Amino acid sequence: MNQFTSFSTKPLLEGASLFAQVHVDTSVSLSSPASFVMHGFHLEPLQYIDIDTNLDDANRILEKTHMRTSFVVDGQNQLKGVISKARLASSYVLKIASKKGLTRAQLTIGDIMVKLEEIDTVSETTLANAKVGDVLKTMEKASYEYLLVTGANQNELRGYVDLIDIAKITSYSLNQAKSAKTFSQLVDSLVNHSEI
Image (cartoon, rainbow, N blue to C red; front, side, top):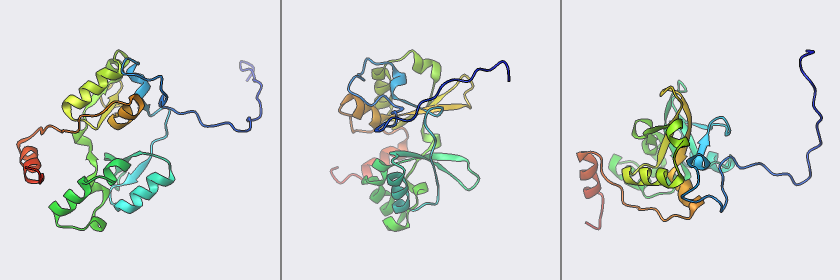
C-alpha cells in the first residue's frame, strides 16, 4: 500500500443536493454538445421493471423512485424494452387495451412498452461529434422516442437519449405526427384515428 496516498475528506455540507446527471438547465440549446442530453449508464443507476408488472404498479415504481423512464426485463433479466411515465399516462394505453380486448387493469407494461427491437442505436463516437439539434432532427425524422447509445462494440450499451427530455431541456415543440415504418403500422394508424 506504500504506492498509494490518503487524501483529506470533509463533512457533507448542510443543504447539499444531488448533482443532476443530465444537464437540465437553461444553458442547453440545440447547439450544445449532444452528450449533454445522453443518459450515461456509467453515471446513472439503471432501473429495471419486470415485463409482467401491471400499469398501476409500474407507475407507482416510477413515482417512488423519481424516475421518468425505466428499462423492462423478462424473468431471465434480459432487456426487452423501455417504459415511461408519459406512455403510462397516454391514450396509447387505451388504444392497446381496445385492440387486445382487455381492460386497462389487465394490461402489463409488456403490452405497452417500446420494444427493444423498435429502438435504433447510435455510436458514442457519432454522438460525441453531434449537437443536440442533430440528435433531435434524427429522432424526429424517424419518429424515435429513444435512441440507444453503443460503445465501439455495437453490443455494448453505454446509455440512451430520450426525445421528451430533449424537448423539455431545450423548450423545443415536438412534431407529434409519427410516420409509419411498415404497411401494418400505416393501416393501424388509419383504423385507430377517429378524425379520419
